[in-house]
Each structure stands twice: as C-alpha cells, then as structure tokens.
Amino acid sequence: MAVARMTVDVPQEFKNQIKAHAALLGIKLKDYVISALEARMSHDEELEDKHLAQLVDKVKKEGFVGKEKSESLLSKMKDA
Image (cartoon, one colour):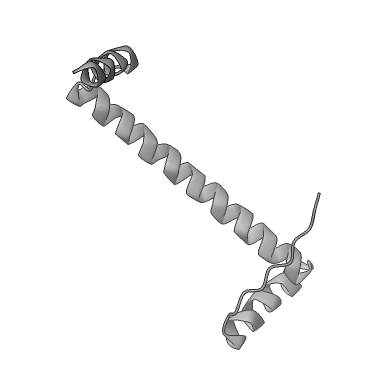
C-alpha cells in the first residue's frame, strides 16, 4: 500500500489529549489517528446508507417513474 503524508493543524492541547489517549492504549499516535478516522468514515457511510434508503422510500411513495419510463420520456423530449 502506498503511503501519503498528511499534515493537519490542531490546537496544541488537543494534540496532547490525542497523544495521551494513544499512550493509554499503548499504540502509536499515527495508528490512533488512523483508527479514529476509519471509525468516523465507517459511521458516515452508515449515515449515508440510511439517507439513501430514506430517499428510495420517498421516491417509491411519491410515485416517481422507473428507469424505462424515464428513458422513454427523455427520448420523447429530445425528439420534440
């Protein structure tokens, strides 16, 4: 896996807190930050999935047309 350097400016006190948490867990600061970012991304993906499911339900309830009807309508609009 390729590695890329990333620099993030944070308040010194916050950095000290993060470093202390990592030390309490016995892991490197780098590994702690990567783990925290991965957890946040996973959480965000779950929220996105829920949001998309809500949109699908809304579309079904409001009776939006399906793919075939949409393509037919677009075709007719182009020909008009």
